Length: 107
Length: 119
Image 1 (cartoon, helix red, strand yellow):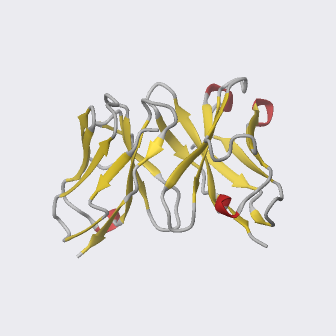
Image 2 (tube, rainbow over the protein chains, first blue to last red; image 1 turned 45 degrees about the vertical axis):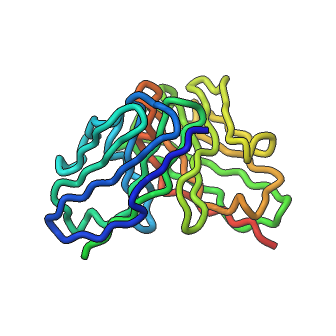
Image 3 (cartoon, each protein chain N blue to C red; image 1 turned 180 degrees about the horizontal axis):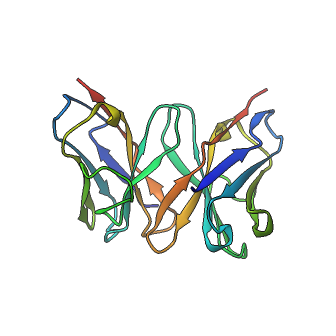
């Protein structure tokens, strides 16, 4: 299975700060990477697909980049409603696998 | 509006069985591949199973292979997961998720149903 390593495991930032989350894969997955946001007690929500494409309805402060084995999710200006756990997921190599998650908090 | 509503979770003893259901609405169910993904309490996301549009192709995580069966009824817009020989480590919230095969993402998720395996 493709191993997914997210960092950091948690981040605390102020409202308005830029937040960057990294996802590294054990094998090249081209651009077959998605990012999800999960708020406490809720289901995951798709934010980014194909590494850098914004899912419809997702605020433009979220962006994704990368290819191969290194990817980033950036929140350009952190808002209180962005408090959540973020997961990356690869779909290039069966079975699909998820990163361990990054908790984003407000400082 | 896309809606996925899971049901069927609950408390079951080790070795027992449970059938989860997922009712789909707001889209043409028979046009989409579907999956089950689970999340153990306080843990991350784990893919469980996949089924093709027609239902002819199924895939399973190694941890559930031979114990779980995924199937669908396109006439009823419903997805199912039959879980047998349940173990404590199967305790989790189970989500059904609509899949985009062309993009590789789980585009929409249900609210989840909790399965607890305990004596």
